[in-house]
Image (cartoon, rainbow, N blue to C red):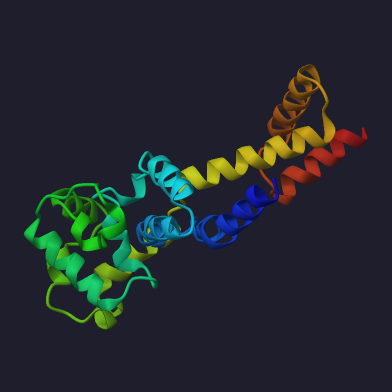
Length: 212
């Protein structure tokens, strides 16, 4: 049992926690996920059973390594300039990519024609970046415009999981049965109808009604 706990804390400290903390930033998501694959593969030198099990599970969660998401890496501070240049050139060439052996791949190897189309839908034509130094991209209006959009994007799956976890923890702290939880949800729903947002005028109106 002590050995199992030690294994759990090692994996949590060196693999899970760093990935969990960094995951809300959409522009960093592809680089983070690729690094996670690499770290899990490296962990096979410590415990091959855990590494293989984690790798098999992670293969079912590669949405942020899809060709449509890879272009977000162009706006990441975690991706080096050399890799950004390779991503741009790969997008112009528009080859094909396979999501296998991810622990051995780099971001530009996951680019397809869908990557170019995805970036275009955000308002940026990748050809204006070709042959330029990534350090000068901030001077390009189209790049800055698209970067602002990307920075506002949330990693939806992560946000949803955190919300569910928060709700579950809160429920367990104040409810003991299913019926109590359902009543709590009804109270929250009614409160949202009464207070749809946090504007001062709304809060003042609700406070007046509540004291009458």
